[in-house]
Structure formats: C-alpha cells, structure tokens
Length: 308
Image (cartoon, rainbow, N blue to C red; front, side, top):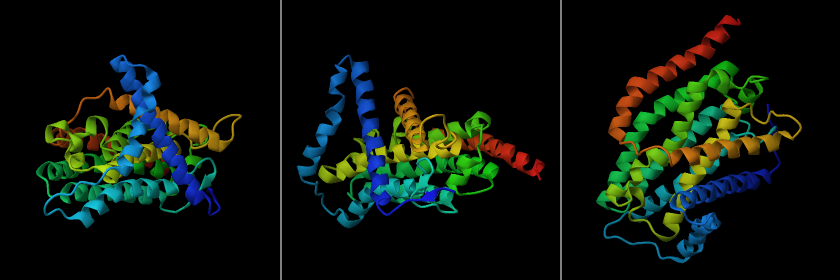
C-alpha cells in the first residue's frame, strides 16, 4: 500500500504530468524535425504556440452550444489529471483508492463524453463527425483495454494500483503478460486519439474535433491528448513494469525513468503506425484483439486459482 502524500502533492502530481506531456511534445517535434531534415534545435517550436493560442480569440459559430462545447474541451485535460491521482510515484500516491484501477478506467471513459461534446458543440459537420468517430473508436478499444487493466489486477488480487506494483516482486508482469501490455499501450494511444488512432482528428474532415477550435480551446484540447498519453504511460509502470522497483536509485526516480521510457516508446510508435479507420479497427478488435485479451486474462486467473 502506498503512503498518502501531503496536501501539496495535489499540485505536484499535475505539475509532473504536465512535465511528462511537455517532454513528449518536444520529443515528438525532434523526431519530426529529424524525419524532415530540419535542425533538431527547433524541437521546442511547438511550445512557442502556447502564448499565441492564449491571446487568440476563440472562434464563434452560428447556433453553436458554447457551454457544452467548452465543457467538452475542458473535460479532456481534467480527466487526464484526475486519472493520474491513483498512480503511485515510487511509494507515494495522492489517492490510494482500493478501486484505483476502476477509477483510472472511469476517468479515461470521461474523454468519451468530453470529446463528443467538443465535436457536437460547434454545430459544425466535420467536428461532429470527429466526435462520432471517437465514439466508434471507443467501442473498439475500450473492452480490450478493460481486460488489459484487469489482467494484472487479477494476479495481484486487488484493484489498488500500489498492490499491483507490489505483487510483481522480482518478475514484472510485462514478462508473462506481454499481450495485455501491448493491448494496454494501444489503448493509451486510442484514448489519446494519437498516432494510428487519430481518426477523430483526421485531415479528411479538416481536423475533425479540432476543426473549429481556436485560442484557449485549441490549447486545452491539444494539451488534453498529450496529458492523456502521459497519464497512460505513468499507469503502465505500476501495472506492468514493477512500479518504482529498481536498484540503487530511489523508487520515485525509477517511476519517472520508466514513465519516460514508455512515453518515448509511444511517441516513437505513433509516428510509425498508419492511421486506422474506426470501422476496420472495430472488426479487428472484436474478432482478434478481444478474444486474445480474454485468453491473456485467463493466465493469471489460473495461476491464482492454482495457488489456493
């Protein structure tokens, strides 16, 4: 069980999450610059957009539902911050909930409502299509992701994230739950609508959910997808990579190092995978990924039953 942190950790954890997200943005820009033959020194260029977006006027459209539009935009980054509250950094966790895995999954599902509202609110066809695309994509990735989250919890016999990290001892779950780990990482890309799962923000629909956003709204929505990616990377560490376990260095240091490694893997991977249409991924997910995820969940279940 993790140690409950003092009140200031409520501010430190979001700050750490933002730092992870910024590092992912810079790394992604560095990879983009390298692929385009530009100097990698321009990697911080995306961050220069922040002041411009902060002072830009939000777009107004006829008959748009501004309150719900704003609510949807804000929900995405807020869900990422709330999700990471149950993730231990070393031996310290802000909210050591007995149902931490369920909490993380629930906060991730909030993005369904948030992104759909962000697509519906502007009263624009392309934005609405983007929102519906995310819902269609969610139908494909959510069930396999839930089984990927449940698999380490079954072995630990606990939904508390700290207990799952502690249950790994000398053998990380990623070693004998590789399929669950891969499905989980794919799920992180999906709920961050990045890489091959950027279908809701496709160029063929003029940016989809991003199509009508500008100013602070665009900044919040863009930040939200990177914060979700960072939150998913942080959660992968206690679920599959032994949490803060590691030699010599303090536990929190290992948590940060492992989170950055997972984050780098996801950022690199998102640039290498082709965009997947939601309807095709639904078929693949329900016919192939979901049955395999269930079979993977049976492995720790049988181990637990055999040990009783």
